[in-house]
Image (cartoon, rainbow, N blue to C red; front, side):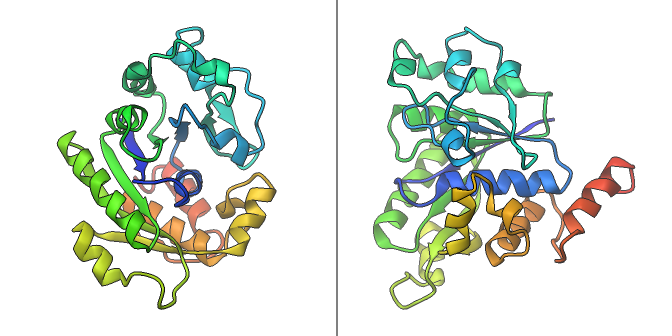
Length: 257
């Protein structure tokens, strides 16, 4: 059975797309078949992040029923599979966004995990991305405006009967200006899955059009993404360069589930 996990945030600028890409890559490194979908149809960024700004077939084409969803899956050189959006304004014309959940669920049975990169906020487009998932991870930065908006997103997800898996605190500086984790946990009333630091290597990876989990696999941020991925599949990341590849191999030969 395919898992549909939406990566959501209450506001832009918190690094949600970066989390979606790197969590997808980390899950793939554990041997899972993963597709990351850019459901931020008004401002799609996954193609730009990964160096594929010119897209032949996008999620927009599939929503308009011009293409089959299988035709919109691209294999990135890092090994990550993605369904990007079309950055052209023309692609938004006559786009029936309410069809998004139905379209994305056509991936049922075609892959093991679908990571859905939602639009930020709670407007119609963001709600359709939430509805496309069955589980949700909330991304926030450790500041009060982002946390306040994250709380609204959590409440919206619960109204849609989605399972909130937890919160990723991204772009943390680890100084006195960050809201303390215990306060974030108390405000949002959900587990903090991981704290990802503000990381210059993240910018280097972006410049290279790759996930940081691919360019800097032993980086602190990469390890944290791997820990979240391990938690999602019910295992523990124990460290080391090759652990995730070994995990995938053991699973393929039937030693691990």
